[in-house]
Length: 205
Image (tube, rainbow, N blue to C red; front, top):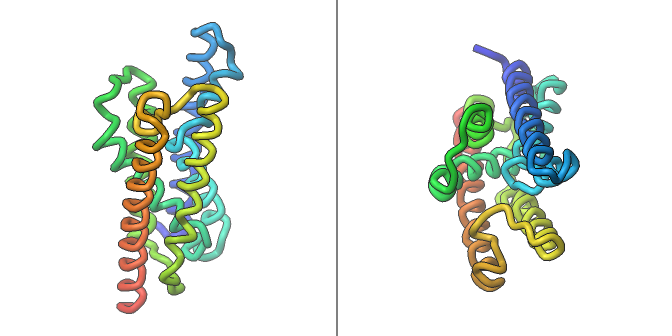
């Protein structure tokens, strides 16, 4: 069985490789569309999926360098909750929106399924050793709320909304805010489930 530290290192390598693959594909698409490499890179950083995979990569990398494997990293719970929702949300809401092929299909699977599953396994196999405060999930909510503010501001400036459920011109701002509130509620429910699991493991230990 891998140690917490070696598992974190494997997760970091998986997430980083996934991000590099998607970045290369985004840059290629920008060039092929005539908008340039910078446009491709700018589109790349517009997605919650990409940014959350990056957060997981950062947490896992820090875990790989920590003696305890990063089990008690402050924002680890936020990263795992967010990436789990990336996988669930994509599978339920977005997988029928497009049909990626070739290398883009591989990147799609890695971003939305492989990294979320591996990050969840990191939490389940190596849960935090310190108790998690009941209000911690509310602090973790800063990640999706920060992205929501970023996505809306970016969309207002550029007209680019990366997901159909936050497309303000198509849905209207009230509907988009309601969608975001619903997603935040699901985020909190998932976060408290992860906290409850960690607490149960701690009591058993």
